[in-house]
Length: 194
Ligand code: GLN
View (cartoon, rainbow, N blue to C red):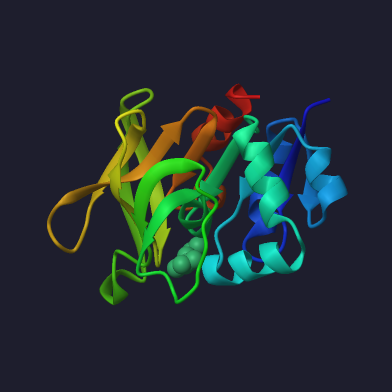
């Protein structure tokens, strides 16, 4: 059976577990190397990217995770998970590291204080139909390399549209939280990469 891990150092682990289980895969929490070694795909949940970065290093998971993603491990990062998957970061804290999984620059907390939390109807470019998305102190993709496919955009407080969902190889990142909706399309896209 296909096994999908949810990085369980911090953040909204439970919601991803529920959604993935509902899609019929075996779900495990990943906190140590042996657990990472056993998964066919991985979700990096929302939460606080600065804390997750510190815990990845404290648990000696950072380098093995970078290596597995480099070997093609399908991965989905939501919100803080998008921050972690970025190559470059804007508005990170001093010394904050990312995993350099997707050649993109992500701006942390980009939607600003006035949009601590917002629900927005996006267009999901994979099928061209609407997707209701919840943003919570969300990042956006400031820029990305040519090979990065933009799956959805949203209007920021600056009035401009910014990518809020991208795919590069078998890595997917969303600025919003697909795990707290009943729409399974983002997780299905991860499972399609397995
Ligand atoms: N602002 C958080 C961070 O930088 C992300 C928020 C979230 O995951 N809901 O990690």
